[in-house]
Image 1 (cartoon, rainbow, N blue to C red):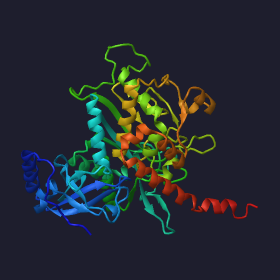
Image 2 (tube, rainbow, N blue to C red):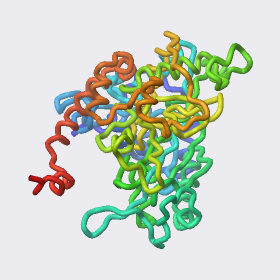
Image 3 (cartoon, one colour):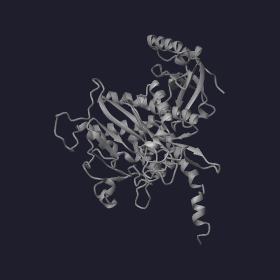
Image 4 (cartoon, rainbow, N blue to C red):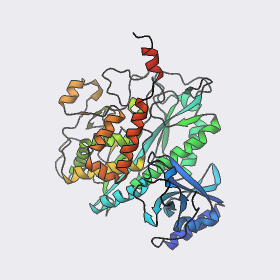
Length: 470
């Protein structure tokens, strides 16, 4: 379909770095390189390249037919996508030690391709840096281990039959039967530079969470993609399927990818969120005006951000308002449906565990991290530049215990309750759209088509409820 490699270059590559990477690949006895990028959904796409073609991959790239990939802005008539390896991202796959993977940026006709989500995030990182800022963060991906049933359904992976508690979070027995899997995940992840510092059994049977260290925005996106690739390959060794589906079970909590983040000074690297005794503590959280206005921007644009943070129809099963719905066996959904910010409690959308960072608790485990980080920078920069006030912080109060009327009276915005509402919010938000570049219109088009297909699908719930209703 396409040529495999192209030899042309756009700009000189750091020769010293190139030789360092080449030496590492040789010393590790790497035979093949996976040239990897993601589509608009965040799904990894690869080509396998012999290590002898290392220079070609760095200078020209591995060729892909863009029309065969979701959301890359191409049809079958367009020129090849060339996935060009980022020298800073080569790493060996611990579970397949003769293979390395490299994150790639997409070029077409030797020019950066604006429909590439990683390329777009690079653009936003540059725009953010021009304003004097760097966005740092780390994701906390939750996922289920499941197994398929003879009737075609799924159930939590539970080989010893011990993961049955109504409140299984942090459970010793549930963790023990999964310890080998989690230890292999941590070992392999840290060999790949993920900086994993803890793991745990989460709130649902069969659900687990991994915590990463801090890094800059581009690397944070790469980390989440690599973790999901790794989990999908290691879980089958233990007879399980790792799923990042947001809400695979009706009666259990969904899976998120919470994002911890702060804004730093682009020149010095200093964290700009803590007040550090400079100025008045306006919101009672020890935060600077930069932090407050950044959160103000996120809250102002939260509807459009939700379209990115919760990208599929299933994601909205985990962010329902709770006015008429059941939560989960443990009694909590753990997912905010209203937009609020405040102190160190998990009923907030934006939780402030410490003045040095915020946690965004809304993103689904299916989020495309490159798009979310770009949207955060666009919305947050709007907040800083226009000094957007997020309103009063919620301190020492359980948001879930407030009535829906009380929440609305306090100005808390109800998050979009389905994909159609979220896409409408994105379509009406020029700031977040600008953060996505031309990807925005492609994303809107694909998500509208997804919603249309869903609305034509008759579900088993409808048949059971309505077949003999009248």
